[in-house]
Image (cartoon, rainbow, N blue to C red; front, side):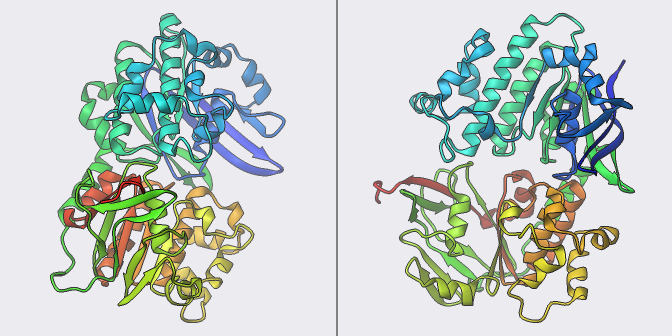
Length: 507
């Protein structure tokens, strides 16, 4: 046997969630699985691993009832000698125990000291700060999302070391990492990959890594060429209403990325352009000063300016406050020392909310939220979500169809137009979220993780629309963990860095 192969059908309350005839995971390889959010990647992986509840779902695998599959010796062996790293670590960290205790809880106490992995995943941090972090009890806002994810990966790698140390040759494994780097910047993502491949070099094991991060293709093909025959790239997609798996060729992404780099140039001279918006540095919120600079160290404060026809990229480690900063720009979060100059008008934290409602939101600035659920009413139909927008004219069905056609295929538009938002996949919600914001056609567009949950084709469509807006003289501000993509798209002099420091530290 060269791969784990599955024909999987999953339904609930008469609704089919997954129907795929040939899902396979090659043995003793690292497989990267791409695909749109909500298409079924996690559900398929959980079913194959044996994690779904037969009382909640109606499941068949390879034509047999799920209960039969769970009792098979090979399924039992996989669960005994593997693990599944869930997408959202917050729900799997115990808020009643400090992180240090959880790192050595249960079977993890058998592992070799975790300090080597901790130091790698917190490179550049003061060891004393790491020790302080280990004393923290997990809560919604502390540790940060990136810290929680890294801590979860430390636990997973410790568990992997225990399993591999005790396993016999030819032991069947299936280590599943579900979006393990979604909250990490490229540096720590690459550190995690190096730790994974260090173990892969010493042992034979099977790994399925589910991700939306197509830029992993660059790092893996560049840094792990010696493993080329033991690495697979696969993509899950819809084919005539049924899920299918296809090989994703690395060259597809790499060629496209090179094309973006070659096209990176100013749309027009901006030497004498007046900024569409200017945000002064050092606004204060939640006890932190948010400092904008041109360097990653945050040495010299500068105002953030968005000029006509430009895309600005705001970078910072996870948890720094990028989303909070842009929500302050939009008047959605109140802080102190805020000063925004928009179309000649100075806006501060004292500006009445009515001004934002009447003059800014959907009129001069529009924001695409990181999570589509923040912006969409789940009880509305796709059509109805457009009628609630602050558009300048009456919205027609033709307007909606034309807007959706930029990011959706026509047969999909026909299918979803009168469907409730709650019935859409995660990727479809994100595309709808983007479509509504693009429809408003404001001079300034703020995009917080706009590529979240998108497959490669949708990503290229979104960026093409963004380029059209740029050429029309609009300005955009982007926050994204997809550093490789936006580093290729955005000019260096339009890249800003955000850092935070306690408000007590005054200049």
